[in-house]
Length: 529
Image 1 (tube, helix red, strand yellow):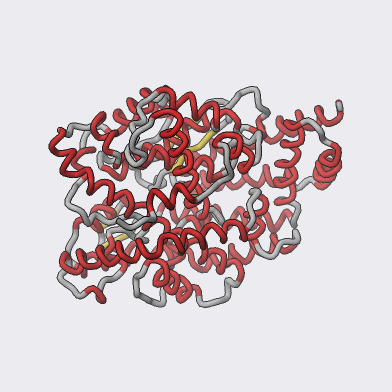
Image 2 (cartoon, rainbow, N blue to C red; image 1 turned 90 degrees about the vertical axis):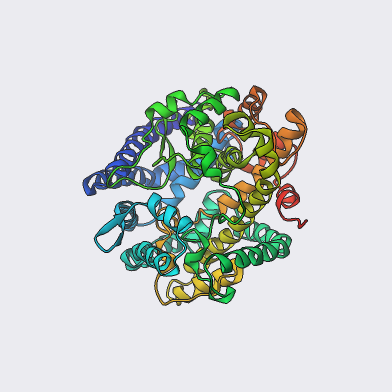
């Protein structure tokens, strides 16, 4: 049907014309931190939204979708339907939401915690939380970082209400529900998986948490019941603390970027050009976390980091380059609309798959200076640390998913109490203070209804890892040697090349031979010894 082909060609052209400048503007803003650069990014996003607010085009999408037969054409129409629907509300309201979100993000990205007259970078805060043993100093640093929550709280609550207003005007219960549905997920299905994981992990996590508390009670010379959030070596207790007698930072004190480059090359996945285009070190005003961006869906893929030579940044670099090689290996014959990832959690699964290698014995043997005697000493400890990593993140994800769902259901409730009630329930930290500590988590402002995708990604990671070990590597599923070009071929063919050609659930069925299942994650990490 000629009309359909012409319409889709025009849509691909017009959306690309707006998406690429917006991506470049975001890149520039997160490097500089300047208000005017964030303003330019905001303007570019609004241009996309204004285009997608066109009601005539939306009606055309709906009508064409009824009779579309060709899979590629129908898939593009399905994605266009969701994109257009999200922008069918009052355009002035949509602009207000974008403006508010961008302003909050700029505040987050330029915030630096202060102790007296001294500003601390995120890297410095991480180091203090991991090495300091004085409880008063730990509390001071933790509280200084949380001040960003107070800085954005009022704006963030207003943003939540604006998002809900938009969602309800489009017929959805709230913005959280809308976000899931427009990304081809259902809230009840996500909740079912979270409940299954909670049930499967609870006994093991409780045992590990008690072990952590015993160790930290001795480390800080306080009673277990007096342990506070700042004692757990992370601002949110979302990563495993260092409780075992092994310091992986010493293994990664050399050039971690070179290690990562060599590792990916050995899998048949070249990241040299990606690293050359990237922004990798600390700068004043720069975004302090890490992300990967596909600028044009034609090969201009970059990562943003603030690298130090330690295990955290080894893991993070492997993670972001995982996204990057996923984005870089699309079938370039696909239309622009079909070149992003099948779903956010699918590309998260790839990034998490490679991230795991930073504490993988096989990876250490090959890429860092460590002898067989040292390997034997740490082998069991590293295995336990990996389980700790996964289960602590699982419980943290429960906090985020349940908090955000409740936040959008009722932003007027006592959010400070809700936050600490969930922390107590899932993370087993008994603490409360009447401050908006929840608001210091940047994802609530900039990546709404997103966090559950990290956990779904971890489930899919175990699923993919099981397939790779079974079909290619053989051996121990907990410590596979990924330095094998067959893995690159496998991932390109099964996942990377397809982009959004299929819905995420169909892609998983086609690639792995079964539905998304949490059984492999549960077998790998939720069993007690």
